[in-house]
Amino acid sequence: MLKKDFLWGGATAANQFEGGYQEGGRGLATSDTKTNGSLTRKRKHSFLNDNNEIIYLHESEFISHDYQATLDPNMYYPSHKAVDFYHHYREDIALMAEMGFKCYRMSLSWTRIFPNGNEDEPNEEGLKFYENVFDECLKYGIQPVVTLNHFDMPVYLAQHQDGWLSRNTIECFLKYCQTVFERYKGKVKYWMTFNEINLLRGYATLGIHEMNTQKYYQALHHLFIASAKAVQLGHEIDPNNQIGMMLANILTYSETCNPKDVELELNVSRRLKYFFSDVQCRGYYPSYVLKLLERENIQIIKEENDDQILKDGCVDYIGFSYYNSGVVTTRKDAGMSLGNGINMAQNPYLKESEWKWPIDPTGLRISLNILWDRYQKPLFIVENGLGADDKVEKDGSIHDDYRIDYMRDHIIEMKKAVEEDGVNLMGYTPWGCIDLVSAGTGEMKKRYGMIYVDMDDEGNGTLERSKKDSFYWYKKVILSHGEDL
Ligand code: P53
Image (cartoon, rainbow, N blue to C red; front, side, top):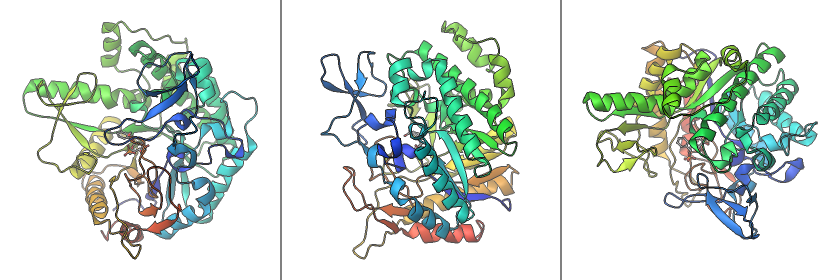
């Protein structure tokens, strides 16, 4: 059986869900300059170049220090309104309560609380907004699960100090953490530091100009220190706080039993995931990364106490996202790539979603077991789900049986990991429980929700919420504690 206090719920993130980007004294975030895209067209950021012209650059493109983040009045920026949780939160939380949620995973917008990231005093209106949200949740017995930072940061810190490249950003972040830990003490118990820390690389998430490998590892070190210090701080302020890491758990398989393929898969999984969870769960850099840094001649500038900080700031639990698995191969003609010259192959045993993500429920059970074996820390599935283009029938109903199938199959495997393998699992919060903007493409039509939101890719629509078939199904699942699937 799943634990009695198993946290059934759903998950969202501020920049994809909240909107109200200029309301309540909120400052501009890096995610606010990002336009929408599609499966084939990349999302880009708008900047003002040194000739005062607006130019568009992809996350990972070279961004000169002379360029200023800017907004183009002729462009649509999905984060500005998102699906307007800012004005719909009461209605949205009521719908979550109707489904029987025990928890709601959400993120805070840093610039709502510190508009530039470096003010002396926090913005009261921003703090009040989240307090209202938490009070609304608690009214229904829903525990907030809060991600401190999900894919954005103050533009000011990016522009003035290259975001996470600067050691000073750690202090700015900790001040923000202290503010929210103190303010929400007794209301929020479950926290996570950085969303998908192993995927952070681009401008929006790290705020770095003229990115390179050296800068990447330096910024990452600052993230590790910031996270470890936040964990310590959170425990000092309230010993009841549970503070987790958040890992993008992309499971990898070796394409064949050729030891060369298996060896490659080992190295890829370390570089892609375990490096990050090793540091955050064990409190030190693993030897395979130290050797890699040495080989690539990368020097991380550390302060004297850093090793101790990492040791003292291990996380309480591992929150992770799980959507799919991937196949690693040494074949050069495999056709797909994961960047960094890593070759990926198609998995002939799996079907794919409309957005070409392989669907692999067994991989969830495997992932849970690997993480449990490796760290023996409680696990929390904080994202899982199927992005699909839903069709609204004439009578307003939405028959998303494909989503129900996806969730059922994953919950079955999750339960096997708990009931047959003894994994310690805290909860399950499927992604985008209410439709929201896609992080990868900026589209609305890539929907994950059990609740539909009337809005299209350009931001047109009434924003009205309606229940999909999966709403009624998930409600039944929660009510039966995962027995009636
Ligand atoms: P979208 C890539 C691979 C795995 C997870 O993704 C990812 C991404 C980024 O696109 O991100 C997480 O919206 C992330 C969420 C995001 C969700 O997965 O691209 O934590 O913000 O929305 C789904 O379909």
